[in-house]
Length: 487
Ligand code: ADP
Image 1 (tube, rainbow, N blue to C red):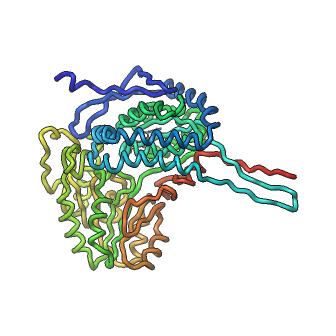
Image 2 (cartoon, rainbow, N blue to C red):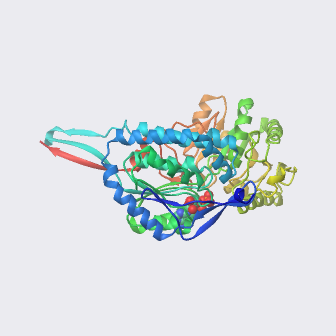
Image 3 (cartoon, rainbow, N blue to C red):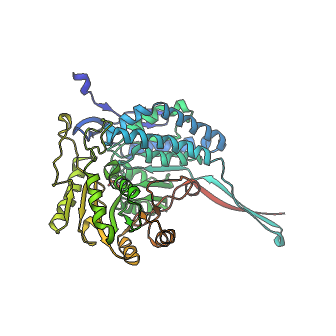
């Protein structure tokens, strides 16, 4: 049996070659609690080598036509899609998410990220104006920036990493990517496909390791003029500080404390299943997940009764079981943190209606040491409570009552974050009014997580700086120049 326990050992991917590292970090399977993988513990030396490789590859890659780059991106998409099942299995094992979610959301979206930017790069135009009186025409030209530093989190590993790599290289930049040290496997698998896709050596380099060491070395590197980061607000503050001496261009996609507002004319047959998904999908580990549900008083009791009854039906267990709805949380520490919020809410007098501490969780024998938690619904929480203010990032949602439109807008906006909000109502006028006034980069009405990648994605307030999407990513990953010609 010894061979079945052999650890998977990852290597950095620098200049088109896999390179071993001198030290490694343990990576856990969250559904069993076992160490199953060794991730390079890279630092400045490895990052320097990767940046050099990216810099060397830049002249060739940036001089290719958009069409040539597009064909390579499409080929890479095809190769990932061909191995979709292997990628999905690996993502589920590494992150704890259900195999169903990895198969239907994570990996298909990673494929689509490459296809989308392969197409969108062909359709941008620049501006031109005439100034006849001066005998001049002005036009803008856009060029890739150089070596892009890309730092991604552990919740949607390949999905979010490719959301950065695809636009960066489509625009002609070369990249050094640093995935989360907790979920590095699918990025490493993708590196194995790059050569076959025709990505020249050095265009995509991946350095694995800790944020404070490898991530920070990338942020501080003088030859990396641009950083695209998705992660926590605290880390973003650190990145902003560390990159300030170099005046780097930053795109920061951060956390949320997203409200769902349910008016009394909402269609509950649509609203309840969608709000369950928006609260508990991917174990609640998505920055777009709902964690504050405001329900108008007339339907509050009915909503709560139906919502809790449905939440109890969500099956928690082995992520590789296709009938399971909730997998394992990312780590023991994170599970403890999420649980501690439920305890704090109870101590403050809130009512836990189902889940943590209320219902018992039966796990299969092999998963007893995994980091599992039941979907948890909390009611009667005060707006000032940490459960209503801080990002919990787990399967925990709070439900509270409201009376008027004016009141709920104020309460929904009364947090430091501003990423995504959801509004449920059949009154078109109200939907528009409320959407306009919510401090939120994204507002979904009568739906959740329906995305058109053409349009801007990003948050307000502590949820981020900058937007990404077809046009926004193009603008972020290119440098614009205004040229004036006198004739
Ligand atoms: P989370 O709290 O969701 O784990 P983090 O912001 O800590 O989010 O991590 C997101 C990504 O940022 C990870 O790849 C992590 O390694 C990286 N990271 C963490 N700290 C730093 C840092 N000081 N500089 C650069 N990257 C960092």
